[in-house]
Image 1: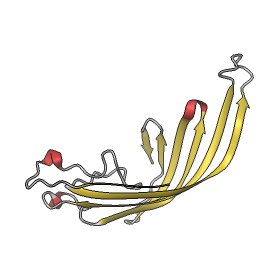
Image 2 (image 1 turned 135 degrees about the vertical axis):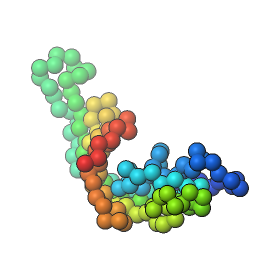
Image 3 (image 1 turned 120 degrees about the vertical axis):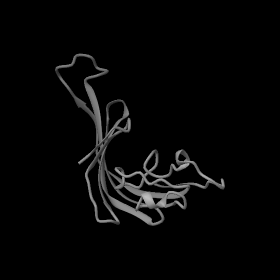
Length: 145
């Protein structure tokens, strides 16, 4: 899997509300706790995924309903690298992460189960040497340890 996105603003002057780049909807993994505002940005994400476990059905005997007593379970190992760059020529003094390459990479474990519930655990390492375990539910609920 690989993906890229970016933003290019062509206005001559910018309001602070227009200073949205990484850290809102898009981010470099490992920098989830940071908001990197700017007028322009580029983001590249890539990852390799390998299935470790595929159980078609785990039967739960104390539930009588056949729709709910069989739970599928799949586990995937994911290796990833992300890179992003934010250009901020207006508000750069307030954020030390602008106008430099942000790099993050690491390993993740993705668990897929009943009704396509996806739970992702990532252990990223950033170019700044920081690391944190991130637990993400498919609904974008995040727990960072």
